[in-house]
Image 1 (cartoon, one colour):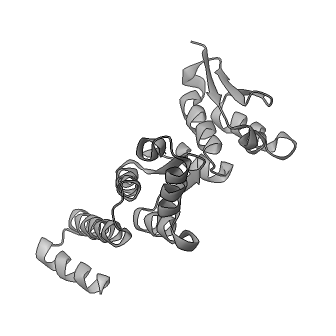
Image 2 (cartoon, rainbow, N blue to C red):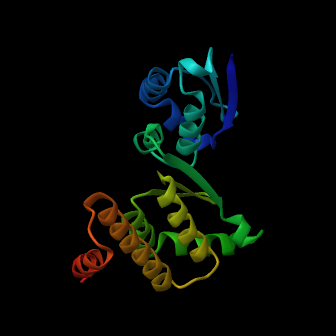
Length: 199
């Protein structure tokens, strides 16, 4: 079965899809078993594959989308891993038509000197890209859910401190779950260990 799908990429991100002297494009084609046709004038990338089972055209679509949303090709290639997903949040859902509101919300998600984005990335092990009117997130499915929730809360006006605290609690719960699962440790002992780690 032939596969063909187009992805619209912002014009200033077309170069990132192609790479220096076409290096990124060739690398993606080789790793994902697809053919990329790039229309530099229109910002349209067509992903083609002779057979879905011979390549990874669906992942190729997501990788191109990720590069278009501001990720470097290296970070976008995280999507080749198992249980790694991409979510794109449109900030206009929170800002409406106001350019000033959009800029304010972007600023809240990024934080002073990038602190907010950095904290979310550290506590979820996700990668965030704030580009234009969107925030894109790459990471493990469960972690993307947490990062997405944090971004949406910030966009809705929640205090940074509150959002960070919720992420920290979720991180602690995940540590406890992993220790119980892999070490066979009792929940009480785990709670004591994690409490010590968090102090």
